[in-house]
Image 1 (cartoon, rainbow, N blue to C red):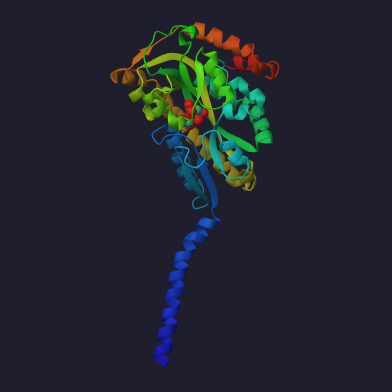
Image 2 (cartoon, rainbow, N blue to C red):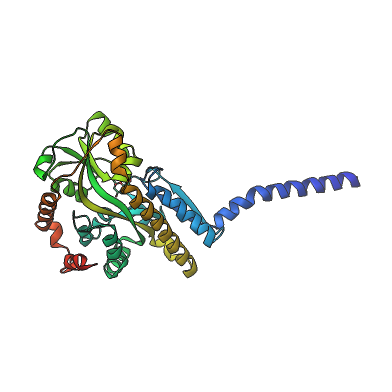
Length: 335
Ligand code: KDO
């Protein structure tokens, strides 16, 4: 009797311990602050890899406090739907574009206009200075997401399926140029002289391969990472947009954090951006040779003609009407 009672007690204790072992990690994970990330970036691109830097930095500064879940290739949310998902509390983090922001903060369209930001250094100065502070405050108020750092996506170039002689915008007449699917993006494509065609990033490779589009525009590192060079023959170095994306967090998630957590998350977002910016800049400088080796023609158009035409198109558009008075001058004066 005694032995059997002891045996039963031991067995019961053992199964209780085993059960605890199974439950505990789940319970620990539940106590962690969940940070879901969604991005259309492909794994081999710097702005995808930067999220691992974000996660690792946070794991070092706050061990065991956060559960960072990274979803690439737009598998969690479709490109462009991330800000709504964040505002609703269905997503904590993403990298959002000026085009995403301009939908809800119309004055932000100044940063969707071609040839406004001069170069990557200018971009960092503008967004890390008083202009960035003011604009990001409005973004946080109107969009319910808080930008944490400015990521250099690269300088956008035109990438064509078939080579053609492109010197001025008129040479792009009738070219079906893929742009991401929003009116702000399509306006940029039209301002370049092309026929802008909306398509999600994930569908561009096939579109180029099958010929449903004649070309696309993206920074060189993304042309490499998404392998667009395999299905195109030319890159026209228009350098029409020094493009930026912003690591942003949902206000719901951010406001629930302690000041120390907020500081650590912000520092991790800045470390991620720095990692991207350094690597992307370095690679961008080396890629022309790579594409030439791959058999592509890399040509230089009359960039001044593109600049003049694109700037005039924006200045005469409804977009410019909502740009705060003096903002363009302040951006231009930022050194
Ligand atoms: C694109 O769809 O062309 C674009 O470059 C737009 C950016 O704002 C960003 O969404 C980017 O794609 C993705 O992160 C994929 O690189």
